[in-house]
Every structure is written in structure tokens, then in C-alpha cells.
Image 1 (cartoon, rainbow over the protein chains, first blue to last red):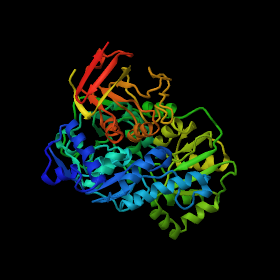
Image 2: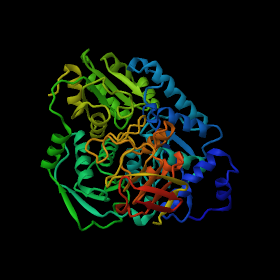
Image 3: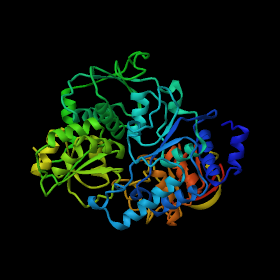
Image 4: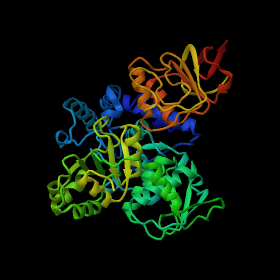
Length: 399
Length: 126
């Protein structure tokens, strides 16, 4: 990869340790993937924020960079391992909180916005169509590429951080138009009846399209929230962080329908539920907000929870970015949800909080949440509609 | 054999070889260096101090930190050799300063061989 004079000086250490280390990472990646040069990015989203994932070694690494590293572009953070204010009420230990706060302090020192959300696009880190960005967090990467039409590879934690310190990323992969052409036609031959069906559809397409870019037809309508849920699922069960939905997502109008075709039927959706759902009837934990809830989703939760009581045997969490909780406070949704026995979990999520061993079973509207709760936290899972999840919260049973 | 440098360095050690990809978040215990993924060829094997030979990395983007945690806990592989190195392992090797080479025909290396990595060169001493 060709470096400019200034980039070479960065690599030689003239701009300090964090910049040198970052250039080492970016130039190595550029060489590995055959990038011609580095290009400027408009924003960065960082993953690897939970102390649960980082450990002391990760914390030490971040502290090393925080000594002289300052971000050059708007940079936001993924969820941490806990709600940064309300962690006690959510059962997080003093010891964990102390370490998590040290991680947050390191990021703050680097000049990063402590947003702690997987939906940065809901709270002010919103790229434009075709803007180059360097984002980690697979659901956000997929949303940015597919729903917004921005251009980013699926960055890892350290490479996203490196891009933030340099303000650039190597020009390869999904930053190049030639790598963004859809190569498999996915015909959805069934009606998506409820919200969680989008997660089930993501499961079907992720598993079947493998590492190819889907061109999806047969979908007439989709809300931002449904697309957000689909993005999380399709890249959890598959690996390609880019798809097109004909007539709905940007760029779909300029590509021809690929020749190779797979069809998703009602039977496939049903099978996805069968594979995601465990055979359980007792629910100990209900989690809504993977990816983090929008204000519209919170209004729906409040509407459906109004006047009900969550069972004392169930923990019921609503995860959302903190700025959205402020809107919820103002609208009175927070009070309705908390009066019913629900808890807000800002800054965190079910995939990165230290929950192993706390709950045996989970009900959720998110197919992605099921994957991580099973894998990392050893829970049995149920995927269903918001009504089903609220009912499970009230009765402690899955119907 | 001649490959491509991911992170340069010179190291010599015993090869531990697998034909399966490795996930460094969830798949390997960062405290002990033991590979814990159920059903993996190397399940139960300790990666500490080995020249770890595997086709490529897989799984979560937090994997780079997993390699770094192993290094800090003194249980990391001494070197890594890949068929095709991807971002997660590459960044893990760079930040942990573990010599790493890819574009190597890994089928020629057997577990137990003494391996010498010299920047982009890999020598097998059977």
C-alpha cells in the first residue's frame, strides 16, 4: 500500500505511540488486502467496550493508547457491560463496575463520545449515502451499508480504534463499488406477520446466502425498526454485512436481479423459529432492545405494559441509548414501564453484560439476542412478538 | 517456504497444527491458553508457546483482544502460521507482537515438527 509522506512519518512514530501503533495496524491490513491507499472516513464506531470481553489485558491495551491517542473523527462506542448509572439496580457487582468504569475513562480520554449503543445512527452518528466510514459492531455495519448505503468493512475493535486515531482506513473490500454487487437473488415468498419474523428471516437468509450479497425481493414494506432487527440477525447467522431489498434500500434500483435464486417460504420461517427456540415454558428473563430500542419501540412497550405487573420471578429489561431514554422520560413511557416492574438498561445489552449463570431462560423479540444468550450466557431462548414477551414477563410462562 | 509477513519477527518452536479455523473469543480460554471450543480438533490442547498452524480465524470481532489477553497472561502461541490470515487474527498478531506469516501451504507442517519463522520464511525441521 502506498503511504503519503505524512503517513510515513506517522508510522515512524513522529506523532506518538497511539498513532504509530494505529498506522502499523492499518498499513498491515492494507498490505494484506491489497489496498492501494488509505482513504478518509467520516466516522468510527468502536466495539470491544465491555470489560467482560476485554479483561485486564484489553484494559491495559486501551490505557496504553489513551496516553497520547486522540480521535480525529466523530467516534462513538458500542454497549458496555453495564448501565453506567443504574448498574446496581441491574445486579452488576461492585468489582465489575469499577473495572468497566476504567475502560470508559480510557475511551473518554481519547476523545470518544461515550454513547454506549449499537445503534449510533439513532443518536447522532449518522453517515450519508456512499460516505466511507470505519465501523465495528456487525449489526450497525450492516445497517450502515444496507439501509443507509454508507461504505464500511466489518471492523474489529482495535482496527476501528486505529481508524479513529488516523481518520482513515485502507481502501479495500466494501469500500470498493466492485465488491458491493449483489450475487444471489432471495425471493421472500411469504408474508412477514409480526416483528420477530424479521429476525427469523435474517436467520434463513444468513444461513442460506453464506458469504454472498443478497438481493431480496417480495417485500413490500419495512419500518426502520424491522430493518434494524433484520440487519442484526442476518449478520449473526451469516457473515455478509450488506444486502439489498428491492424498492426499499438504496442502491437496489441500480442492480439487476442476480441469476442464482433461493426462495424463502412460510415453512422456512417456521423452521427458523423451531431452531432458535428451545423447548421451555418457564421464563426468568425478558430482554427487549437488541439492537437498542428506538423511541417508537419504547412507546409500543409502554402502551402494551400499561396497567400490567411483571411477575416478581421475572427480570424484565428494556435496552436503549441514554438520549432515547431521556425522550422516554419526558413522554412518561419510562414511568409506565417502571411502574409495571420493568427496568431500563441503557449503555449495555444482553450480549456483552456479565449474565452467565444469572438466568436460565430468555424471552426476546431479537434473533441475535437468542444466539449470544445461548452461546456466551448458556440460557435457553424463546423468540417471539412483543405481546408474547410481555405476557411471559407478566406470567413467567411462555405461551 | 516463503509466505507473507503479517507481523515480522524470528521465533523457533514446536508446531501445533489444525485444519480447522480458530475463534479467539469464546473458542480459546484467555487465562489458560487452552482451546475450549466443543468438537474442535484441538479441543483441550494448550496453545502456549507453540507455533500455532491453522487455516484462518473465525467468529467475533472481539477475537483480536482474545489473542492479546493470551499474550499478556503469558499463554499465547510463540508464532502463528496461516493459510489465509483475516483481519481479526492479523490485528491480534500485530497488537500482541506475535510473529505471524500467511500464504503458507500448511498441509506440509505436522504437529510436533520444529518450526522456525524468520520474517516471511518458514523452515521445517522434521
